[in-house]
Figure 1 (cartoon, helix red, strand yellow):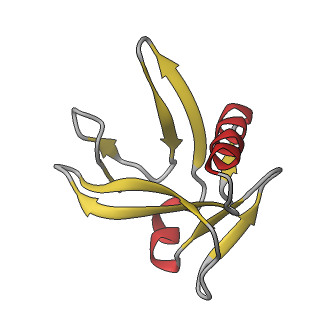
Figure 2: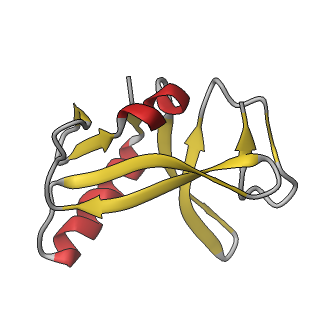
Length: 106
């Protein structure tokens, strides 16, 4: 089950409104970095035939079947730390992250 905090939900809804269109976000993983995998979040206008979808309050989160293996119980948050802000993922299957925080390992 994919979840989003209230802060992340508000930020995604704001971004979709500013964008002027869209159903929600696609959450996935790609191979990269020193630890192997990185999270990918992009705004979408339609759901693919093989996508798994999760209804949120104001939008839908879709995940492709391959990425779902790594994202089954992930929580999406939006955080501000000093001058930096962005989406953060809390994933119980993560074993560790690389030093720069760009990638993770399961």
